[in-house]
Image (cartoon, rainbow, N blue to C red):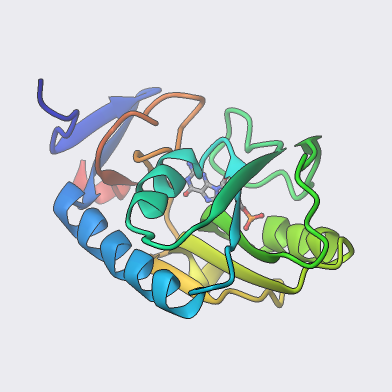
Length: 188
Ligand code: 5GP
């Protein structure tokens, strides 16, 4: 069986083209895993994945981390079926682990306006971790309006809607092995 990695996909009547290949993604995540393994040596970090979008990134990232570590998840409300943020954050699942005194690494799929990350950093900060770091696979730096802490970035991307590799459009496309970007109208 091969991975699901066409060059173009049509989802909900919109056309997307591949933007980051499977190889590019894996190579970058391997580098990030190495870096985290080095910087968190002897700290037994706990990764907190933000559901749903970050689950594939987190699963791959953790397998490139070669030091003892743990994982837990929380869930935030998504864009729903839209391609733009609602401007509101709602937490749908709490973190179960006790983060007091722990080295916490928050793992996001994408930072867009920064609203979700700001909410998370403020909220997790109240749980008194020994340290709090933030890693995101993608960062739309031109779209980021909130002053947020981001310690590790996989890829900076333009302010266009993306999907694949855990990211959805109206719940579809998460199983694509690559990251796809919305085609500009004139490209159609
Ligand atoms: P922010 O709060 O930074 O504006 O948005 C963060 C969340 O919005 C992400 O965790 C993700 O769920 C969603 N999001 C932002 N941009 C995109 C995008 O281009 N594609 C998809 N599928 N989701 C996005």
